[in-house]
Picture (spheres, protein in one colour):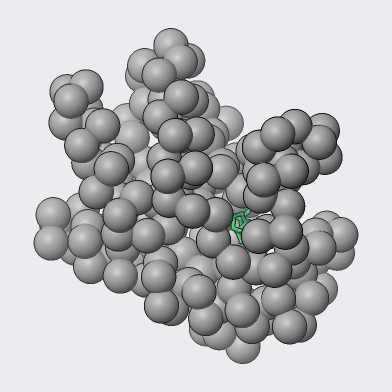
Length: 184
Ligand code: AMP
C-alpha cells in the first residue's frame, strides 16, 4: 500500500504518519526528517540544504527527487510506503508518477489533513521541538510556500481521483481513527 500523507505545516503529518506506519507495518519516509538528520550529521546533503530549511523555503526539486528515488529503490519499500512531506510541488508529483509507473506501482491513498490556518500557527509555535523553522516569521513563509507551491499538488491527485480529505482537528487518536476508517 502506497500512501501520501499531505497537508500544511503543522497539520500533524509526522505524528499520524508514524501511527499509520506502526499500525499497518509500513515504512515511513519523511523528506523533512531526512534533511534534518543530514543537517545534524553535517553530511554534504545537510550542508547543501541547511540554509533553505532554516529559511522555511523548499529544497530544489532535483535534490528532493534524487533523494526519494534513491530511498524508494531500497527493498524495504517493496510492500509500500507512507510518504510524509513529499511530493511538495507539482514537478515532484510528476516525477513520482513516472517512477511509480516505471516500477508498476501506484498511489493507493492520498490523504490530506485539513486544519484551519490559525490552529496551524498555534500548534507549530507551541510544539517545542526546537526546530529552527518553527518561529513566527518562518511559519509565515512556510504557509505561503504551502499555498503557492504545495497546495496545487492536491489538484494533481484530485484529477486522478485519489484524494481523501480528513478533518485534522481533534485529538491525535480521533484523527488517527478517521484515517483508519478511510484506509480500511
Ligand atoms: P517538514 O518536516 O516536512 O515540515 O519539512 C521541513 C523542511 O524540509 C521544509 O520546510 C523544506 O525546507 C524541506 N523539505 C521537506 N520535504 C521537502 C520536499 N518534498 N520538497 C522541498 N523541500 C522539502
